[in-house]
Each structure stands twice: as structure tokens, then as C-alpha cells.
Image: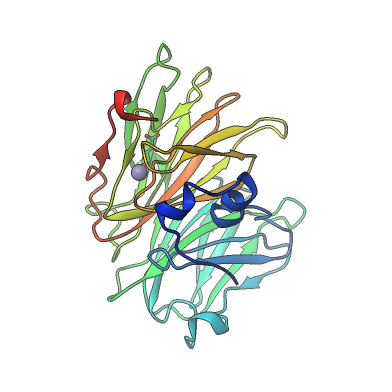
Length: 275
Ligand SMILES: O=C(O)C(=O)C[C@H](O)C(=O)CO
Ligand SMILES: [Zn+2]
């Protein structure tokens, strides 16, 4: 498990490109036959991936000093690869492309598998500390709340699909979903916002190899960017904006943890105030 410490905005505004990437960018996810995990001190989120070319069990690792991964945690999983399954204490959940799974605290044995190991599933997950157990739920995007935002004229026409949020799939603190840009639109989350009560992680995907997303971060008056490629993730501390413009349309998974689960609790930044 790789460790990322928290960072102060007073320091981050002096970072070089390399240092910004070292602290916030997550690369080399989705390696065949591997579970990869990144532990951030920011709200103690764990960001991870599993690509089962043979069944892979999610274990706790020395870093969280737990008997099993979900002893004190919950997890949200979304499949961005071939058909696969997640077995939770013997119950098998089949996940097709973009299907999700919430697993509550206390489930002991989590195993990732692919239906066809030549075209493996690619499971992406966010996990957060939990205080109680909510039911495990298989999530189909077609049954989720969908919100359409922006316009083609504004280059930001997109659909936000909310997978895990109060009233739909209950969790202790994890809120998770997916945003899909319409062809011709390239901007996400602009006008931008911060939310001091939650941190957020973005995983960009459905990008051709030579496409880029310029992901904007930093305090609204001290913006910086991180150049991102397909299937890379980025950590947004609570004080940071998190927005992006791509060389073409793309999709991303967002996950938030922290003080509240109120998706609309955002501190909007006015265009005139961005520097
Ligand atoms: O395109 C968007 O706008 C988003 O996807 C916004 C994120 O979901 C977000 O930042 C939620 O706080
Ligand atoms: Zn946000």
C-alpha cells in the first residue's frame, strides 16, 4: 500500500510540476493480476484497483492494522473493464461494465474475479473508515439518480450518475458516482467549487491513449494544473478546486469522504474570483 500524506495549501502553491504530481496524481492503476492501493491521510481514504487475471483477494495489509480490510471500513467499487464478479463472504455479485457495488463494514472475505481472464474486469475502488454496517448493494447505473448539467455551447454538457448517496445506497461517509461528458464537451465541474467538509478523488477514463485532461486544482486564487491520461486518478484536498478540461470528451468516477454526505454542499467559486 502506498502512502500519501496531507498537504497544506500554503506549501502546495510553491510546488513544482513534479512535486504536484508526486503528491496528488495516482498512476499505474489497473495492472494485470494485481490489487493496487493508495492510502491518503486526507480523510483516510484508500483508492485502489484490482485486475483479476486470476481471483484476487483484498487483504488488510500491515498499514491499517486490521484483521481484514473492511473490519473498520466500507468500500465502493465500480467496474471499468470486462465482466467480472466480487464475492463477499461467499455471495457472488456480477458486475458488468460500469456496474457498482457498495460493501458495508464487517464483510471479511472479498474476492475479485473476471469472467474471461483474457479480457479482465478492472475494478476501481474508494474505501473510507466506517462506524456501522450498511447493507451490501449491487448498483446498476440505469437505476441511479442522473443529473444533466451544462450545454454544448458551454463545452460542458455532461451527465452526473450518483451511485452511492443517502436515500439511494446508504453508507457511513462514502459518496460516489460517475460523470460522462457528451461528445464535443470537454469541461467538467466548471464553474468550479470547493467543499471544506469533504475531500474528493477523480479517476479519468474512456480516453484514447493520446488524449489529455488538464485537471485544475489548488485554492481558487492559486490554481495549478496536473496533466492526466487515461485511467489515472487525482486527489483533491477539501481546500482545492477539482475541475478539468480535456482534448476531447471523457468520463470520470468521483468519490468523496469527510464530514457530510450532502452532494450539494459546495462552496461555489465565481468566475471572476478564479486566478
Ligand atoms: O461534472 C461535475 O460537475 C462533477 O462531476 C462534479 C463532481 O461530482 C463533484 O465535484 C462533486 O462534489
Ligand atoms: Zn466536488
